[in-house]
Length: 107
Image (cartoon, rainbow, N blue to C red; front, side):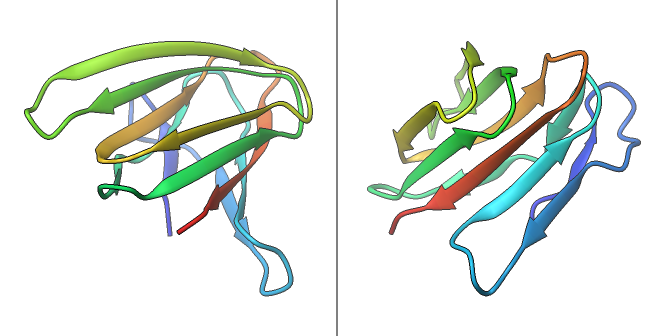
């Protein structure tokens, strides 16, 4: 399961909730600066993020060659973002009031 910590200090108590009756994970990032840990998606693996609250975030993407790309998004509730690997990435919350989203792996 993915860890959620404050980006700069490694501290924090964000949470990932999983239910056997629901596909994917509900991720709660309570403060600006909270981030997921780095996690990988292999070639052809697809995931989606559905915002459950306004969700402004930075996505750091580490490619297989070691290069890192930064992307910023500002999603509104029910907006969906889908990406396909290979890559390793983490997401940092930029929303002051906190954010909640559903993350789902498709294959």
